[in-house]
Each structure stands twice: as structure tokens, then as C-alpha cells.
Image (cartoon, rainbow, N blue to C red; front, side):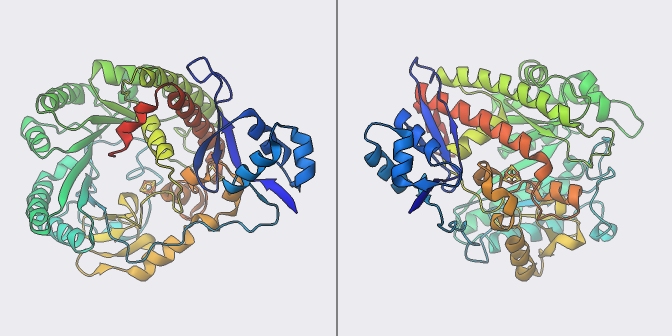
Length: 479
Ligand code: SF4
Ligand code: SF4
């Protein structure tokens, strides 16, 4: 019988950070990370490709104790019979799947006119329910949304409510109504409630800051960097840059939050064609403005837009992500946290052996609510007629939800089957696929190089931290 090595990625063959060599393998079918020795590595090579008869492979690998090692690799699922059918990824969980997170788009208006914004830019979804959605969510709809969440959260011990926009803080009354109602319902249902919010920081007045700090909001500020970065795209309708308005407000928020021992405050940076160094931006936002974490996301845009990232920019971005990851690894070896949110997220997923059947929670444990109370797969689809899945009064359209999740299942994305990054990527963001291809369930094949390159950086970081300071990962145990 022919045997064949499964799709995998090898990493960490060099110095493990403690002067010794460390080899690891990331097995795509199981998302397991396993340490291997040189003999096992040579067997994986020998059985790569179309596969071989066991004796031929053993002869080729010529490793000590080859038979026992081969047996072990077969048991671990790293080498399998060549004709064996691929084990399908987990089917849909039992539906209706209980909700964990509801994202309330409390307004679809913004006081900025960022040139690349998917909400106002040329890549907006629609036309659809946007035309009938009011500019602000009413307090009543906010409370109905909370009731809807509790009715659909099943036995979960905790739920999360995220507020989004437009500019979220244009509708503080709805946020307040939702928070008060959610706290009351949480007590009734004996569930913990977490709040989070994304804002452009222009409206972070002291009373708003007190509200956010008092309710331990997880706060993410959309910001692009220092004055020159910020003012390039993140402008008021007059064209005036927003940096001078937001910088003092951010400093005030950070100070109040630290004093109250609040949750970490994050910056979310959108990388566009003309963005400057990731490293400089990270340093500026953490050291000058005091953010605890910074996450970077390439702009989601049709490639024809003049702010879209050209192919070469992805190489540059990977090089900079790699340099920033190096700093993170050094900090992790000293058992210090680092605020590079992208890497933290990736290390957490690797540590937990995440193996996704769907790229994200959209439509599954997470739904978005439009200002009118319509339900979408996530906040970005909340006003899209074609991706609607019900409303907060009449409940979830389970047939539409299930049909989407079936279509978006990674097993339907055949190009992803041979990709080592599949357990983490599962085809990537539905919204990005919709913008690019007009089809949310298509894999984002335009971004594979970037995704695999970034996954490689994460695996390498994981290997060195695992070898040099495995205790570092304990911080992900309670997450
Ligand atoms: S979209 Fe690309 S990178 Fe992501 S799993 Fe599919 S093939 Fe891999
Ligand atoms: S579809 Fe995209 S934007 Fe929506 S939750 Fe998933 S990853 Fe985020």
C-alpha cells in the first residue's frame, strides 16, 4: 500500500532560541503542532508528493528506527494511505447555533469621510436595506436587540455586545439604552455581559469616556498613525484632517482607562497604498499615544481604487510584520507581553489548535444588526438585502443562515484543500470576497501569498517561544 505525507508546514528547523535545534510540523488536517526529530523529518520528505510503498520510503529516508517512526507518524496522521479520502471538516454544528456576540450598528452615519471607508466609499454593499435603514438606531431597537441576543444565546455563560457604526459615538443614547438593558438581562439570565466598541475617537468627550470606563468596554480606535498618516485619509467632510481632534481625546481616554484598570485599548490601522512603516506606526501608537495593542489590516478594496494595495506592498508589509514579530518573540522569551495584536491573535489560535470550518464567526456565533433592527451575517453585512438573515423582532431566518453557512463551509473551497494555512484561514473574510468577487462564499485566493506568508511568520514565532519560554502561552489558557 502506498503511503503519503499529508499537507503540512515544517518550521523551526534552526535554533530554537536556546541554542538547540527544534523542528516542528503544522499538520493541516488536524491543525496540530508537533515536535519532530531529524528522522521523522526525513520520512515526511520521503513520503511527500504522490506517495510511496512503505519499504521504498523507508529506504529513501534511511533514518534510524525507521519502522517505529513511520508507525508513529501514521498514528499521528502525518503520513496516511495515499488513496485515503480526505476527512471532511466538521459539518455545521447543531443549528440553531447559540449566539455569542451581537454587533449593533447604532448608526450608519459618520462625521468623517475616510476615503477608503467600505461604508461610504465605492465598495459599499448595496443597494439594499440601506435605503430604508434610519440613520440612527432607536433606543427601542437597541433594547429589542439585547432581548434578541439573550433569547438566542442558549446556555452560554456570557455574551458580548459590540457597538459599531458609522461613527458609533454619534448615537450614545442607544448605546446607553443597550448597556442598561443588557446589564439587567444579564442579571436575570445569570450571564456575564461584555461590551466593546469601535470609534474614530473624534467624539470621546469626558462623559462618554466615563461611561465606557465604568462599563469596562473593550475599546478599539480606528486610527492610521501619526498626524501625516492620519490626515491622509481620515478627514472630516470639509477635507480637514482629524488628527488634532483625536490625539488629546485618545490621551485622555488612555489615562482614565489606566487609572480605572480598564481593559486594554487597541488601535486598528488600515494599511493603504501610501502607508508608511508598520514599525514606525506601531511605535508611535504605543509609545506616543499610549495604546496597549495595535492591529493592522490591509484595506479591503477593489484593486482599481487608488488607495488599494499593489502586490509589491504585500511583500513590504510581510517584511515589516516579520520585523515586528521578531520584537514580540524577544519580549515573549522574557515573558513580557507585546501589543502586536495580529501576532497575539495568531499565536492564540495556534496554541488552541483552531481548525476552522468557517473563516470567522459571521452567521454562526455572531450576527450584525442594522439601525432598523435587520440582521446580517456581521456588521459589514447588516444593511445588505442579499445577506439578510432576519430581524431582531421576528428572529433569525434559520433557513437563510444555514444555507449561507453551508455554502461558506471550507470543504466547498477546493483550492484551500492543498493549503497548509487552511485551518486558520478557511478562505478568509466573506466581506472581502464579496467586494472582490461579488460572492461572499468564494475563497480570497488573491490574498493567499499574504496569508501564507503571515502564517509562516506566526509559526516561526510560535516555535521559538515554545522552545524558549513555553510558559508564555499560559496567558492564552483563560482566553
Ligand atoms: S484562501 Fe488561500 S490562503 Fe486561505 S486557505 Fe484558501 S488557499 Fe489557503
Ligand atoms: S465576514 Fe469579514 S468583516 Fe465580517 S466578521 Fe467575518 S472576517 Fe469580520
